[in-house]
Length: 210
Length: 195
Image (cartoon, rainbow over all chains, first blue to last red; front, side, top):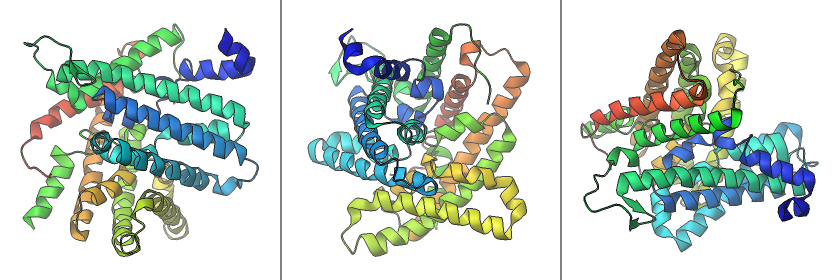
């Protein structure tokens, strides 16, 4: 394992946990809003995943390197301002390089600010750990978030529009499942995805309520 | 006047912020286990969403637009929201302790409820006037309340039956319930329309 050697045992463990056991969407239930809302096409999902990953990594660097300077009582507002600044960068980047995706994502880019994944990781991890591990954790959570979004988007785009990344993949007579591209389809698919992931990762152990 | 009613009905039924725009899902998952907590949270949401939209509109149109600093409106909005929530909490603690005891625990959670920021951003994107913004904000919050109350009530009854598959318990079944309700809400489509 080259990756393991490069990151060290601890770093590798953080990377692995973020993608599997502590998966932000399936295991912890964070960031569900955007996972539902922008997973209607694969292009949107990739753009959103990349945006969130960028904000996560940037926030991880800032918060973990400033962690000894941030006053305990003002920490939430510090996270918010940091996150909001990077979200503005993402918004400007999308406006400049991909106006169609920017239009399609609409208010959801701004809502990266309130995406609980970033706030949650900042509070739970970056504020107590060094820069190196925080960045690994950010990458790990970003990957987990992106692949989940893309996986849901692949199913929704093929069933809902009959296309994949804009190219038609289904036969001509394919009846489009319009409901898949709308809100109910998103709810059903995420519900099923959570079910599958829980069954696989937890095996026999029952999840505690509350 | 008819325009205001259209926006109000649309915000509650056809363009429901939870079931059409899929916003405010985090509290959906964590709070929809009982109708009591769901109700407490929704009352707090209605109050905060309307109040912050009412504060954010003048800040955006009277300060940010004339000074040409539209770009930073995300930061300004989120700080206004965080400050308002903090202020409301302090005022409630000082003057209305019973209210604080009932809804106090929900207030800090609201800052990260996407509904609040979404309503403020949508009012900018859709270029609403001040009056329309208030109607839209109130309607959206009421629509959110309707959605979370329905899901919480179904979830509560489902817990009594108790034969939900193990892996589907918790977040999974809430998504499925919300999906069915969203499907039902599609039936309202075409009743009123806002662009």
